[in-house]
Amino acid sequence: MDVQIVRLEERLKSIEAMLAAIAEEQKSAAEGRRRGYEAQERAEREMIGINFRLGAVEKNVEAIRPTTVELERVRDRVVFAGSLGRVLWGFGKALISAAAGAAAAYYTLTGKPPP
Image (cartoon, rainbow, N blue to C red; front, side, top):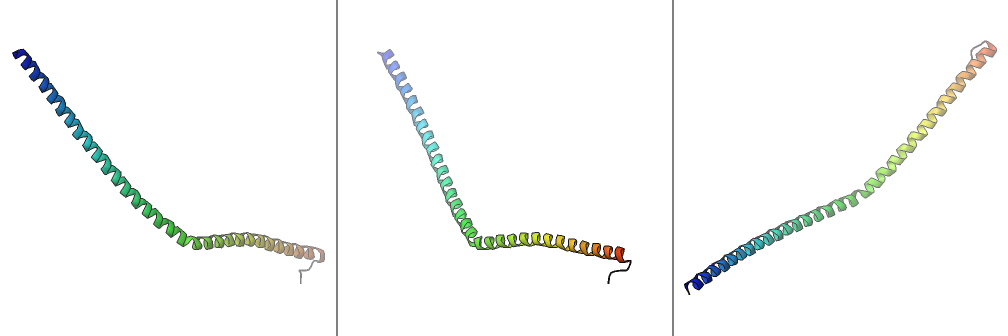
């Protein structure tokens, strides 16, 4: 009978140890879930902040859109004016070259400087 009582006590101690281990694992799991929920809440708050800031940026971009469009128009005008200026400069150089050539031809043919 003593042997049975000893074995029974050993089994009870083993069961108590298992229960203690299970309880510890449950505490650990609960702590892990709590940390997970806290991290999820932090991420959610951060995403809300980012969405708010992104909305503000979108509003600012929409607010400056007319200025951007006007800037693009002015840039296109400047590009066109630059191209037109190059063409007119080339035409002016050709005109001066032609006038100089005509004056040289007049001087060569007549021997007198042009009037």
